[in-house]
Image 1 (cartoon, one colour):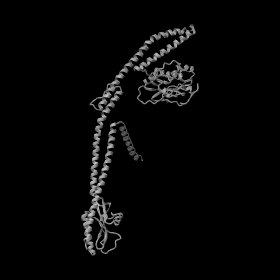
Image 2 (cartoon, rainbow, N blue to C red; image 1 turned 180 degrees about the vertical axis):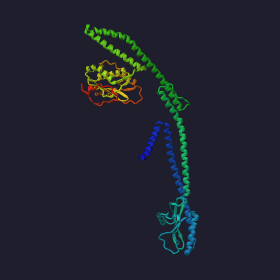
Image 3 (tube, helix red, strand yellow; image 1 turned 30 degrees about the vertical axis):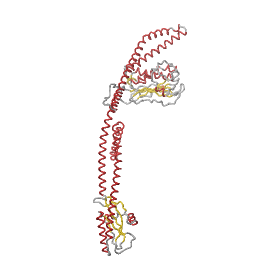
Image 4 (cartoon, rainbow, N blue to C red; image 1 turned 90 degrees about the vertical axis):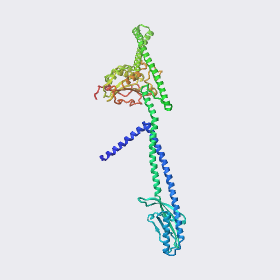
Length: 556
């Protein structure tokens, strides 16, 4: 059973592989597709024309053969009837002799040895009537329908198509029927003459063979012509495609050779003009970007000195605020708070400028994301309690160390937790950590305001807020999520968001366990939560076992 199934399975696999390769070539090669379509349509046209010509020639050839046979038969019958009419035979032997002479005349005039002579039914029996004559090759060939029509319509010719015996195999032919009047009172006889159409069949077969060979040669010639023309047209298109890919990859100096004055030359000139314009615009944008980055960096550095002075002065005033009037004391508090926010904003601007300049270098080391998340949760626990949120860590196990920059990952975690506290509306916040063989992941789930799909698409934009009328209450700069995304990308990871209005938000950070790992990263945590429609009131959320909040690193 298995031995029989083996070859069948191999044949099926071979067929599937060939179909797959053909479909791939069909999708990816314009040249292959054009040649194949041209050959298919040309072959169909040649086939239709060939069948039409063959049918027309065969019909005309057959009709000509029939007309020749009818003419020969009429001539032979007239000659035979003339011999019979001129005879004065009065006895049986004489009548038989003249009948034989008439038959020989029919054979000689018609050129066919396939003869049949039958006495017509209903004729009065006469002793002198000669017996019926039938050539062996016509035995069983004459149909009752033909005989009936000849009997009912004297002196009229009728014919039918038959298959006559040939030298090696049967050949097509026709049988022509008419009547003769034999003297001596013998009465009317039916005369049938068979004509083979072997010559016509051979002529038609030769013509069809010649047409088939000509069609194959024409298709081969069309194939060569189509291939040459298609290659002549497709090669410039392929050159444009390859040059476009190089241009998209950053090789701004690549150009197409422009030769001649035809449409392809115009295409090359237009493409080169577009590439020149694009290169100039990119150069301008690059220079503008460098100037912008330098400006931000210089301004940030230049602001540090006066800001430090302001901060020191503000701290002195803040330390003495109890000696000031209430309005002055409140001013000192605001000065200190805003100065700290200004310092944070400057630090974020400097970090963004480093990413824009491509000068960020990671200081990676083996880090356990569970421990790092636990430290961040613990440090922000008091802030969450102030806002009425229950901040919890869920770590189901199987966590492994990952090669990351702990400072930057800690900043991501703190930004995500701070964002959840800001928009959590006092409802619980769940921080989950999990890992697999290729990646570690951390998600932060809140049950707060949530966002629309359009807002979720822009949540990582710099200084963007879903609700401009809503002010920040925990001192954010508007750059936290943008920096977090840059940190995740720098590690080769991803930072995704799921959100639904009135249902809360989930941010998921996925990092490869080994930096620059070529393996496909499978996220250990889902982006969409298991309870997407849950609306937890303040203090009500899926319970998390506090004892399992922080687990030891597993070697699994």
